[in-house]
Amino acid sequence: MQTVIGLEIHVQLSTRTKLFCPCRADYFEAPPNTLTCPVCLGLPGALPVLNKRAVELALRIALALGSEVRERSVFDRKNYFYPDLPKGYQITHHDEPLARGGRFTFFVDGHARTVRIRQVHLEEDAGKLVHVGDGALVDFNRCGVPLVEIVTEPDFRSAKEARAFLQELRTLLRHLGVSSGDMEKGAVRCDANLSVQVGDRPGTRTEIKNLNSFRAVERALQAAEEYHRELLAAGETIAQVTFGWDDHADRLVVQRTKEQAQDYRYFPDPDLVPLVVTAEWLARVRAGMPELPRARALRWLERHKLTPAEVEALLPEPALANYFDRVAGELGDGKTAASWVLAELRQYWTGEEPPLPAEDLVLLIRKVGAGEISRTTGKELLAEAAQTGKSLPELLARPDLVQLGDEQALVQVAQEVIAAHPQAVADFRAGKAQALGFLVGQAMKKTEGRADAKKLGEILRRLLSP
Ligand SMILES: [Zn+2]
Image (cartoon, rainbow, N blue to C red; front, side, top):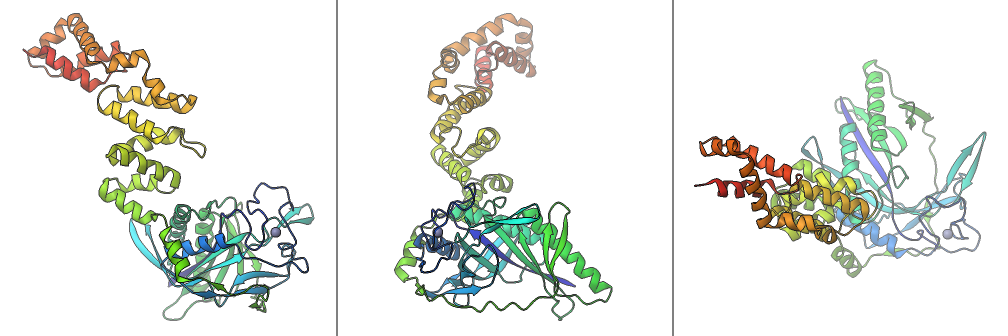
């Protein structure tokens, strides 16, 4: 028995305005029905005008997936009746989509997997029903928000693969700057289909609608797989069922039993001319593409010798990845940069902006590297700068720190320690190497741990050598 899974991923594009009207598209915290106009409410006589930016973001996705962008694509009307769809139809690419084909490689348990992409197309989102008591209210703010739908071939063989794919796809979308990728806010939603093939005979497909977390995708597909295998093992036939997923109960919920052959009566929207993507336009979009996360990961592994765990920690958040690249670039040492960014800086990064400018972190790492301050002091200064907003150069100018960076001052400390511990000095001269560690410890105590232990060790060794 072979599990066969395909995914349809809806990605909300982070454009300023909606797909066919000038209404703002960032509806998430807006009061209900405040971001609407005659176009997205489908009032008579209103005419849609295509958002060029949305097309460009969709093209980025298509290019990143290696899809073949079609010169001419056509927006159809998909007709159906639902309260959150005021026009009575959704405008969507249908049989003449924006792009076809492509592939995406991702990693599962350290192994590369590639799945084929069937198509990439643009469509508008519907509104939202808000259930209140026995009734439902409708909020049209989301109507007309641009979506890209990515349809894969049925190339996944397990729920785990589907989840890993989605996680890496989201990283890609965020690096492309096309979507927030925020699944909790519905910016990426996933429909899945699953069948279990026995021998050469394809199995009956089950659909699962509206999965909006990585966990939900994996759990729902696992549950559907179990359902299929149990029925097949019992010799029963599988009915065509559309499921939803109840996250709280952690189980599938039947939405529709028999697939009602829905006739959407697709036809080209007479208000919209075909979309033509010229070679020049496509070349401009291609030229503006950022480095893709997979290429970035390889560069980090090869040039900076980062570990896969470090890459995995730095990559998903583009702002963190960019920050790391700036620090590593200026410092010329990716390993050290990664260690500081991940172990020290990241914990203070709460908002949009980094807690410390990249050039300040570089300065700090250099001071530690040169032995002017200890790593402990460096960490403390970083914490203080991040938490108080004080500038790092200002903190570094503190008199006690200047003194610790000063070789003369450290020699003085070393001499005091030598004078205070004749026994340890004698031990060291008698060949007991660990006595030096004790003396360094005493010297560190004197500087309250702020001096550089390595540098103190060198000074002590020099002073004690005959
Ligand atoms: Zn509008």
